[in-house]
Length: 102
Image (tube, rainbow, N blue to C red; front, top):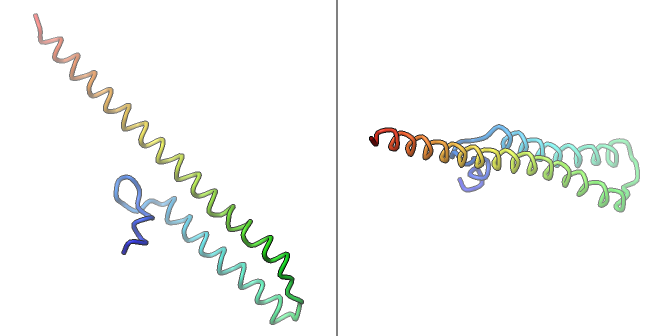
């Protein structure tokens, strides 16, 4: 399923940061609307469209933005580690080849 591919990292496997972030964002969407429903329908409070439209996207932005930042930082660190490892392997191969020369 293509939507599940977004939860996979550079290794092709599911990553905990992405999965927890997606579940957290989904729970925010469900819970925020559920609490608003409870306030309006069950408790009989007036629905304030202005405060809802200001608060909901801001909270969702924080939820999505924080997980996106964490995943981007992790992916960048993995890429840096791979480059460093490849450079070290190349240096080892060069040193080994030079050590074999008389």
